[in-house]
Image (cartoon, rainbow, N blue to C red; front, side, top):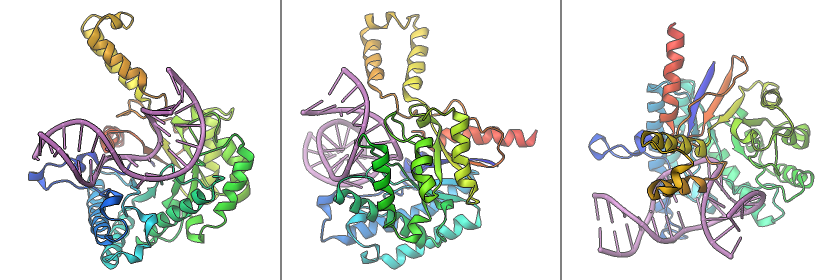
Length: 344
DNA sequence: CATGGTCAAGTGGCA
DNA sequence: TGCCACTTGACCATG
């Protein structure tokens, strides 16, 4: 089965109008000044609401045939600033999260996470490493609370996130920090290829880290185009695939498309409607403004939607998390297409 | 109640 | 040097 999923936010539910039940989100947070350090109750309230809404998300996903979902990292706001069990409503929150886990298991959903770019196990700065370890452990604890046995099935996916001009030395530091993680966290942590040429391609991750400690590699199709490691997409895909298969876990990949291209096609369309060529555009102040905005978009930025689907190289079992700004709205058409094909 | 400026964390690349 | 991109917008003061 080729399975599509989305990340963290359900655009439909997040913006649900009040008369239809109001907003549903798992990423309520607070400004530091409004709680730190004495108002844990505020954080506890947010976490309980977030956990409650996570269950709503999972039920929505089930109703719409989506069984792959990335849980947001803000479920416990500021989670590296306290112990989870110090939250006043820890019991209620745990209970709710266990309910989420149970629901996901009963319905065959795969839940994953993707901690932010601030988790840098290879940093030369000790304080950065310490904070990273705490953050990763919190993600792992969240899965514990959901009642999951530690497994790469519930991947905690990060990047090496910094090479400091020396991939080998940084990889060694990364592994050293990794060894300090709990067994549960180690059994969940995986690495993803970077989107910069100077950083870690699938091949770099494989040779410098996977060979040493055997953790799976998430293949990101879009990132691969910026950092190939001299591998074709097919080669990188299958190199990463092996790292999952040897653990008996379904390979998980990420897919997204270029925001620049998306905006450019849109602008092109508008121009052609007005009979203006791309070259002429600068003589029209309004369009020139749009063009300028477009040119500021970084090459790596993700598009709102996807127009294509990734090459799955005829494998029959693959998970694909689509990273698109429109979230679940970007994959619903793909699921429709899959359904049609099944009927035919 | 809508809006826009602002907010925690690390790193790299670009104007 | 300061912005943007990466996992994710959401908070909150102001009008």
